[in-house]
Image (cartoon, rainbow, N blue to C red; front, side, top):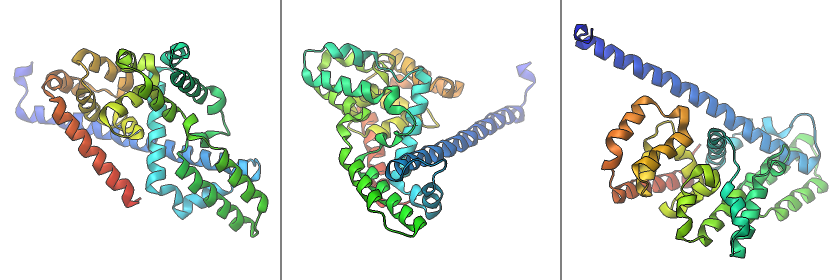
Length: 303
C-alpha cells in the first residue's frame, strides 16, 4: 500500500500533521491567555478585599486591565509562570512533596524550618481563595498594592487613610522567605549531594523542590525553569535535562511525568534519536543564552 503513495501524498500527510500542530498550539495559547487573565484578576480581587473589604465583584480589576497595568512585562511573566506551575502540579497529580515531609526529621534545623515553610505554603489553607497574593514576589506585591490604592481612590473620588493603612500593613506583613520557591531554594542550598537523586525526581520531590534543584544546578531563575518545562515544544526541556546531566532513561521519565499529554509522538522520536548527542557543556551554554535573553526582555519593560 505504501508503494502506491507518491511524493505529493507524503507532503500532504506532513502538511496535515503540521496543521494539527498549529491548531493545537492556537488552542494552547487561548487557554493560557484565559488562565493568565483569571489569575491576575483573582490576585487583584484578593488584594482589593484586604485593603477595602470584600465585595461581590472587583471594582479595580477592570480598571487596571483597561489601563494596561496588568500587561506589564514582569506581571505577565509572573502570571505565566504560575499558570505553568499549576499545569505541572496537575500533571503530577498533586503539589504535595513527600521529600519535604521526610526532611522534617533532618539533622539540620535550617532544612527542617524550610521544609515546614514549604509544606505550609503548599497547604490548602495558604492556597485557598482570598490569599492568592501570597505567591507574589515582593516588588510586584508592592507595585500592585499601591496601584490598587490609586484605583480605589479614583473610583471613589476620595482619599482613604484606612485603605492606605491596610496597604502598608499588608506589605509589612509579607515574608518572602515563607513562599514555596524561597523555601525550596533554602532546602536545596542546605542539602548535600546524597539527596541529589531525591531532588531530581519530581514525583518524590514535588514541583517546587525539583525546579529549585534545577535552578541551583543551572543557575537560572525558578520561574524561567517552570516556563521552559511547560513550553509548547519539549525541546527546551530536553536541553535543560541534558545540561543537568540526566541520564536518558531518567530524562524520558521526567518528561513523561511533567509533560504527559503535551509530549507528541514527533517529540518523543526526536528525544529518542538526539538526546544522547547533546553535549552538557553546549546545553548549559544554550540555557545561559536563553536566560540572558529573558533578563534583557524583562528589563526592557516591553508588553
